[in-house]
Image 1 (cartoon, rainbow, N blue to C red):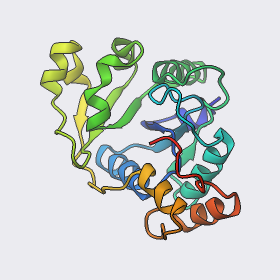
Image 2 (cartoon, rainbow, N blue to C red):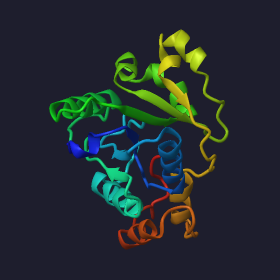
Image 3 (cartoon, helix red, strand yellow):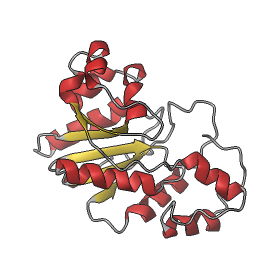
Length: 216
């Protein structure tokens, strides 16, 4: 569950597997927060990532712990357990509906901004109930190195009204991926400056990613 206090004001939502969370995630969240004047950004680790079926993912509590460590220094960043505490697949639409309902129950009109990459945005029509997602939030889309730029007008031809619910943010294009970080750990290589120091320590203390075959 997400607290009512977390849902006051303009709230950004950055979901993901976070296996592990890295500097790219943090930079994107800060860029969108500043560009759109968001009160806070909620980091929402997924429990059962629907876009990675059949692939090994680190335990949810490890990923939650790493997120908490990574965002500890930014008072505008907060952790939400909305998905890890909910059974079943981690559908974005379910998370958004829950957050909107909780905000209204606390007497606040929900003002939600879903943060995603251009690559993820291109796949939005394949998501669970994408039309409802657009009703519940606006989409803040950041560029992804190597991926085509987001095209809200083209998206509107597949999901009517998507262009009116999409904001393009010229975010930092840091070519960092969790899969590369895991591979470097497995190979005994440094991941300094790719993830926060506290997360590096957690990975080492818990022997994460010593197997080179986890999910991409």
